[in-house]
Amino acid sequence: MPEKYPLKEDISAAHERIKPFIHHTPVMTSQSINAMVGAELFLKCENLQKVGAFKYRGATNAVLSLTDDERKNGVATHSSGNHAQALALAARNNGLKAYIVMPLTSSKVKLDAVRGYGAEVITCEPNQKSREETLADAVKRTGATFIHPYNNYHIITGQATAAKELIEDVKGLDVIMAPVGGGGLLSGTALSTHYFSPTSVVIAGEPANANDAYQSMQQGRIVEAVPPNTIADGLLTSLGDKTFDIIRKHVNEIVPVTESEIVTAMRLVWERMKIIIEPSSAVPIAAAFKIKNNIKGKRIGIIISGGNVDLSKLPF
Amino acid sequence: MPEKYPLKEDISAAHERIKPFIHHTPVMTSQSINAMVGAELFLKCENLQKVGAFKYRGATNAVLSLTDDERKNGVATHSSGNHAQALALAARNNGLKAYIVMPLTSSKVKLDAVRGYGAEVITCEPNQKSREETLADAVKRTGATFIHPYNNYHIITGQATAAKELIEDVKGLDVIMAPVGGGGLLSGTALSTHYFSPTSVVIAGEPANANDAYQSMQQGRIVEAVPPNTIADGLLTSLGDKTFDIIRKHVNEIVPVTESEIVTAMRLVWERMKIIIEPSSAVPIAAAFKIKNNIKGKRIGIIISGGNVDLSKLPF
Image: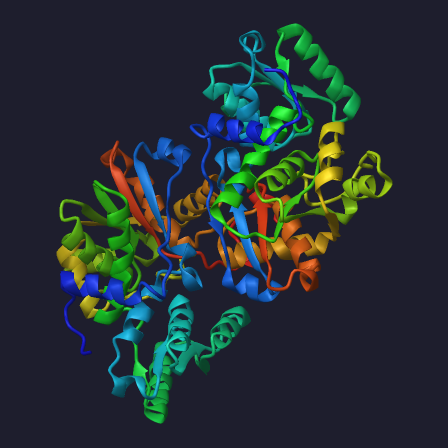
């Protein structure tokens, strides 16, 4: 079906569509972390989602929303991260071919994981021009349908289902938080909050070293990410027009956090909660600590984006 | 109440007694790990228990089973590990004093954690003689009741509730596995299996570098642990007479695993399941891999003992 701006009923329909394929992930809490922040944090654990990230929701919704004609030649995308694995698995689970353009500098672990889900990997130079050209060539050669990692309403609608589940499972949330990179998760989170929990406030965390979303909100236009330097490697990309449009309407605040704040929050969750979260997931937790004077005693939902970490390269 | 050999109704009563204080921990599964083993593994996640370990069950049951007279002067124990934190918190949550004898070589993190739960830490030299003398002195001075870390039927009965929950939550388990150190968890697991799932087989994993329980089973008497050298630092102790008695009756097999098998299994769970398990918890998983030809297609419950790991000293 064609893309359109997601309404409330579109998110509900997407949720029903993908339910048989996804995990309904748990919400976890920590008394000791709550005591440190002075608020109640409810972590929606998408690190326990299939492929270890929320991205599987959007990819599954996008694949299931294809017309017969679009399905015929499979799907294609560019990604060096979780979207690559998510689309590869979603395609395989629905009997489609997948073509994934990845930088030839990607780690062998990542390349193997995507191939392990049955996708054809096409490597490119690690720059935007090569990535776009390689993808265009692949689409031309194969006839596959391009599924953008985030600037796509089917993707956004799929990602929105994580916050929808959180809102259904935890009543009376005052604030809902998520990290922001390209904005797929944040825009979906903001839409679900707007439709299903309209009195809640949406606050994003963003690495100060990659604060293009913060800048974009300030300037009222999409500011491109300059080559950023942050451990939160899921948050390197710039907003798209679709995600920016939703974010500027429905996100109340973007809180920048430093690299050391990200690492501290990540380590705290590992130690106290015994779950593995990736640096990007620690960003909204670090943001909650940063604004703790403003959220005292409140109920804060936080979308934990994923748990894909290279254990050989830990920051502690 | 006085200690007695735990019957079925004792375990049920202990479970009711401690339920308001403990977490009913989740059971987690991994399709990819199941595919690698060729069996269905159900992980009972006591790493998500309070203080990050099953030990909180036994400590809570022991504290709640004290007579008024025994409660009066608090509780005491020796432990450098999870039992220390578990008893400290269980005591505090029940308004009792706790005196914990710990080797002066313990890490500051561990000492601080026990003190953070309000216990008085008494340091000793890192050898058995000093530990026992220091504990005897503390008991004499304070009048506190000694709670042995594992060779105590209230402790064993409390630890048994983890397997009881697993058996209630997952039907038709063919095998139930646990690690073995002093044998508190394993004997409790074996008793619950005997009473609540009598057709299931009980198999333990043990580090080959600390295989005193294996030796004890072979020789029919308690073999003392020689100073062992294993990353599974929760499994260094020797069996006690109470735990050995139960283990020899109700445990079918003890599988020794190497250090590298332990590290491989631990890393696999971190990577695929995004949960933090300590090396001791990886031991029964490594054992499941070792005996995979004998458990093909079977349903295997595994008690994950805990998730307390020093993130500064990871083996990968």
